[in-house]
Image 1 (spheres, helix red, strand yellow):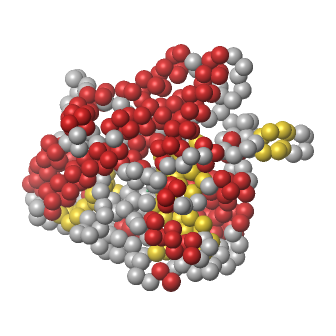
Image 2 (cartoon, rainbow, N blue to C red; image 1 turned 120 degrees about the vertical axis):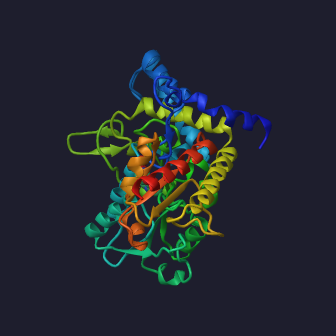
Image 3 (cartoon, protein in one colour; image 1 turned 120 degrees about the horizontal axis):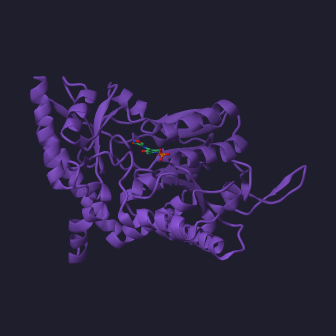
Length: 411
Ligand code: 7TS
């Protein structure tokens, strides 16, 4: 890490208005897997759009409409470059990871799957990479199969031939678990999928905010993530899809902007990616995401990664020192970062989260929209802390002392 990056990291919190409110107690925000805070640069980009060139995209002849279109479309190029594709047609703007997955479930799975086909998922998925496939399976007669999760926090890949078969048509897996922080060996899994002729969708909602992604190198068919988990505004998701896949799919939503021509009887679809962007998109939010990507590139994605890893490993060791606490996953040899779930043998996770909140510390408690993971550990809930690049070692110490006070309170 060069001097420049260290300087940037030291100063990074000054860019976030939410951490600089003199009238309020300091915010210790440890729920970044849920959503991240927004820097001034992102807020300013959104504000500039509304204040200076607010207009709809893809239709105006006048100057500010062209400016809005140009700003919106330039973010498509930025995202393409950021994730390692040269083809801007691969990038579809949706409203979230959830919508991106549903788009593929409706426009691809419902069109191409049939009885006897198998959709392969894992026991560590967020519900948004589970329920759309359950619905698509019900609709098409396909069945869902699960790669099991080991209690150590990693996928059980000991006998892949049991899961990857000639019937496997789609493999939909998360790049990183939102409960355990485990990063899966997606490249290996994509290889197994290709060997049996299955298509692949990778849910990168937790991975992309702090790690370098190269979709070309992964060679997946689809990759999805959310802008709001990487300092961008809410309301923007990305669907990366290979062009030949997107071409064969029908539109997800019908409406304006997604057609070339419409008669009373039928419509001719617009080219990809516009075929999948019906109606007025989240223009300001997409422009804000562009500023978030610039911010990440300025910080350098490798520095973000190493900072988040440093915070995570520090927190794991500090939490493991506390008697009565058990950390899920994060075992030696398993690649894991940013997210830590834990439970106390006697105190309910909601009580812990509530008490920590009284000390100004925001953490999650619950099943984290991944109930199969909780089932694996025979838990109904856990406490979860998740870090981003603006968190500090001092905040980890506040968490530890907050937990100690919580335990004294309940003694
Ligand atoms: N996939 C994963 C792995 C996630 O962690 C999440 C959100 C989603 C998909 C859905 O993303 P969205 O932007 O469409 O909501 N995860 C969480 C979380 O862990 N706490 O709140 C949301």
